[in-house]
Structures are given as C-alpha cells and as structure tokens.
Image (cartoon, rainbow, N blue to C red; front, side, top):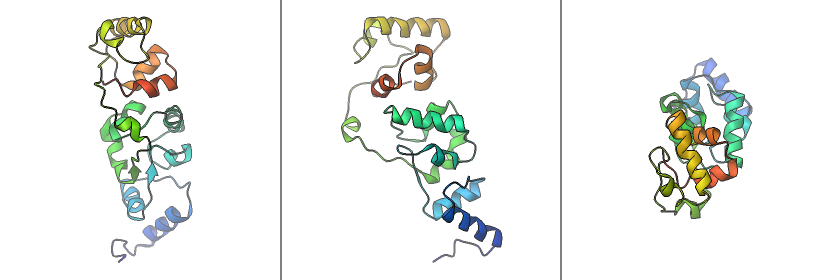
Length: 177
C-alpha cells in the first residue's frame, strides 16, 4: 500500500518531518507531492498564517494578507482567487494546488446569482446599482480608473479606493475583473 514512498532515507526523514512538525516549510514540488500523498491539506478559507507559511514561496506579509482578507469575509474559491489576492501570476501558485483545499462555508453566498459588474468598463450609473456603491463611490471608481488605469484585481481595487475589508468582502460577489 505504501509503494508510492521510496526507501530513500532522505525521503523517509522528510515524511517524518511532514507528519510530526506542523511548522515545517515545504521546499519543493517533490515535498508538496509527498505532503499531498500523506493527506496534508491547507483549507484556504480557514488557514492561519502558520498554515500559509508552510507553502514555498509565500512571505509572512503575503500570509498575513490572506488571513486578513479571510477574516474580513473574503472567500477563496479557486487558485485564481489566491493569485488575485496576492497579485501573483496563477502559474506561480499552480504547483501548490495538490495541498490546497477550497472548502465552502457560506452556502447562501454561493447561491447568489446576481449579475456581476466589471468596474473597468462600468458607468457611474451601472455601478450605483451594486449594493454598497453610492453615487460618490461610483464616481470615485470611474475617476480612479480613468486617471490610474484599469483595476488589476479585487486587491488593487480595494487599495486604490482605500476600501475597508468588510466592504470588499461584500462587494466581491458583485464585481468581476
């Protein structure tokens, strides 16, 4: 049953580290594959800073940002959501996918079938139809877009407009980039 695990002493030691040290930081694709085979998963919507730091290539700043977004109500449904939140290309995070688990905890929000508005093309009038966006914010969205260029993603939108996390957590269901 354990034929997938070579008898290489180095890999046996790694297996022991992965199973016994919850703070061990994975170093390579091979280690990610071994962790996945051992059943190690990171729940992207309940992960702690320590959980995120187990992943190779993520900084403490990025881990804290993901947890802050999560605490503000932002849900991660796929690897593209994590990439957008970190302003990273998806291909850099794709190798991590075997140990990332995208669990859903808010069934009501998942059933939301409201059409999404693209703030990069929307008019002031169409933006005011989005819950939480009044005419002042709609004008700020359009003016910022015209002066600084299109919004790259939800994080860029939040930062450029200086919006609080709880507002973004609600708006993300109505916006698409």
